[in-house]
Length: 216
Image (cartoon, rainbow, N blue to C red; front, top):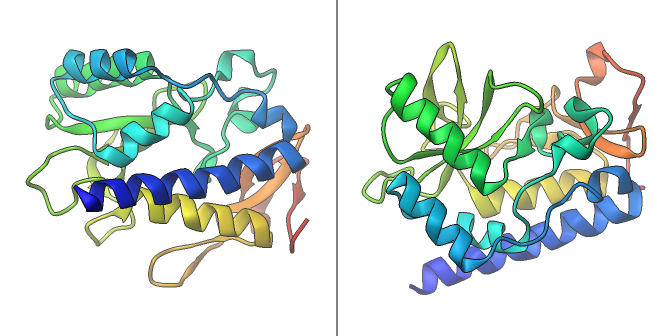
């Protein structure tokens, strides 16, 4: 139990740093954060999927029920505040995505797709909610045309609090995301675009964004 509490507290601390940075430097993205999900809404989502969220994922939804990408005039960028331009789905979107994955795609139960590319359903991130799996509570990636796999591969995935802590550091230092082995992911560098946050490959910039290169 103490491990669950510790993980949830570390996640909340990391997200607090991220959100503070967003309001200070990317308010167009910060404004898209939805209100907290209630305990009843989290319980209803778990019941609909017949899955119990890892404590860290539930803690995140208690802070914000995802991102309201429909309110963004440029959803693929301003709403894509997570690395690789992913957006955090509201709980109703998680349930809908999960039903597509386990039903239409025949993917394994317990893999919770909590994020995807704004505006489409081609790829995203999941958290492993299979309690007996070594990757329980950890990050993974999904896509229409490939099997679910832990991220980064090969590994058991990235614990959610650790991933968000690294995201906070990358924003505060104005540098690319670094994977658990210390390698920089050059394709995931934070940038400012139309008053919001996005993530880019500075070597092959495809939008007119200001790439961060040091603390703001």
